[in-house]
Length: 272
Image (cartoon, rainbow, N blue to C red; front, side):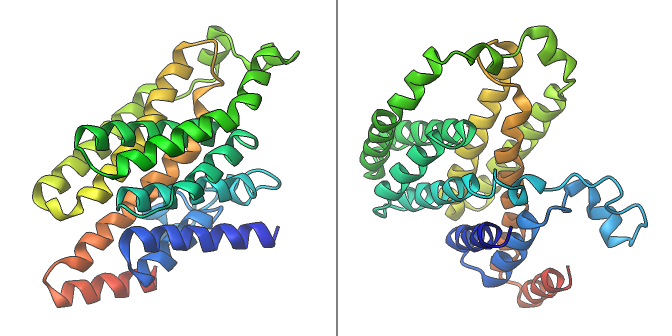
């Protein structure tokens, strides 16, 4: 309960620093994501000092929960760091292979999201004729080959039927499926608008868009199929990406050519 949460904090800090190159945003973001009490629905209560704050906490408890995700989150954050760096034409394919393969043998949902994001980015960069498409292809193919023993074992294990949910059970979970999709579309529309206004953020927007698509895809499949565990498992990655997009707003404000506004933003982050 000390070592792994601390490592997660450092990796989240490095991830945000890789995305935004801002120490203040990185420190603030790492605190938010590692805080088991933080939830966006509590922001208004937090700012207004409402006494109901954290009475019904619904934060990132899973990151600090022992043993998972204390260990498995490390591979997910390493995967995100490597994916963004490959998109920037840096040689991080071996770290991505390590992250995806370790996720396959430790937490299948992170494996699915990282693998699907790698596939989408390979297709995107191949169509754009970017050099990074080669690294995404190599990382995805090697990761798939190294993960095959585990993936094949899923088919033949005796308790595989216990891992699947029927339509009635999935529906009984009352997962807010459509509300979640609406939120995803709102985030996607926001990112597209940002890209239209600030084309220089192309790599960051592409990273966020491709990070949202896998979760959306698997949630749809899980909500309508017997072959995937219930959709709520994929909320973990979605909430992390949603928080990173929230921090993206502060990063945009910081980069505006208004010195006073930038200083006010930094001061607000420090106060929060």
